[in-house]
Length: 535
Image (cartoon, rainbow, N blue to C red; front, side, top):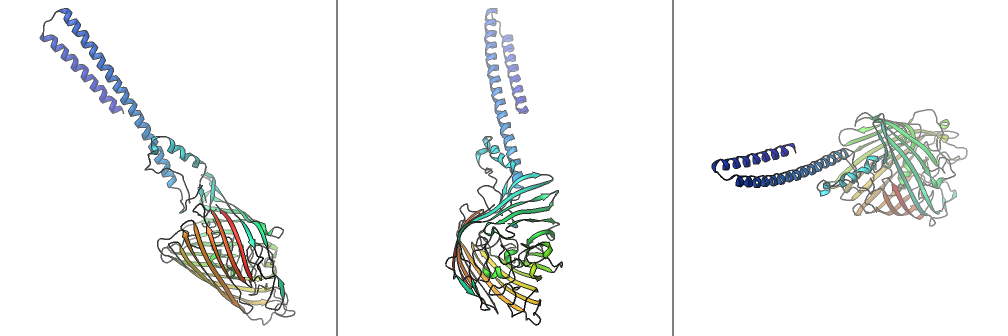
């Protein structure tokens, strides 16, 4: 702008000098009367002043235009700087109605998870005013990332995200047979329910403190369908430190990674907070312990955990056996793309074929008091194929009572995802051995095995999904199975809100408790519909 002003002044000075020289030269060449010279000089001066006024006005207009140009440049600079700052933040693959700091994810979680910034497209002409800057101002107070929730604190000493998971469920089990007979000839009642429940509420607090490598994940978790039972309200969590991509450590409570569904992909399953019965029968549960996880190369992930027991829910520290003999681990290879998306089903709509192969192993020495009672929520009990808890007195004969047992379980899973379609399966093997207690000498190893298979398709990408699945298990004490067909509708084209409808058919279910739609011993149809919120 200064350069423009300097050029204007030089041009004005040159015009004045030129006019003056021309006027003087004319006077020197001619002799005219004094009166005529005076009149000519007055006229020339008047014309000169008029031209000066025009030049001043033009200069004023140029200064105004230059000022407007500077303002536009400043707006553009401020917008681009702000846009660069937002682009530096972690982004998710999902676009949400209102942007999330977060697991709300083991994932997370995971992982589960996307940040919607609401920023204007740089190609749009919004920069001609201050509107583009004003539209960004709300995000100075926080942002939203799926599965991590809303960021409410962001300082150089740490941050805090709040995430919520909850769902309402209508459940109808009235089609189940009212009784069943176990493998030992005992006739037992089947719980038949029809009710509405706000089934689960989980409020998660997560972030980092002092160093971004030192993170916390703390939560309040309640199963409203289990009100009145022990451990229906849980305050828990874990702390972890990230050294690098290869090695990270954590301490606290987490799921033992003994099957694919407990690797840390909850709640991104095909059904809402429910597994197939084979997975529910074989899997370990949540426990306190220490673990390590990371990546071995670009396509292999691992988790290894040492814990107190198979399930800590409903079990106090005084009931533990004082031995660190519970171990669980997983090793997952993703050979084609190096990733497999979050959880089950191809919501991500993979353009290239994504594949995974996983192997899991768990081992634990368990005694009767380390196992939660059979009516507690979200717990895993060691059961026979007919649903009988292994520590039940006299199940193997009069006077025979198991007080201790060694549990060993391994599983192998495989899956593929492509263009919204998925096919995923898992096979399980379990051994119960080293029995202790009155009359247990000579009891043989109890071996069980089974598998599950699930398929899904995104009929409308990011909106409507259909799925089906089934599982079975086989052993000396029974051969139960289940089948299910369901739909998922995502009204906002993301996983934050989901409406799920599912039909199940059960045959002698070996598992069941109040938080899941299947009933222990149940045979017959079950229907449930769920509205899920996970942000």
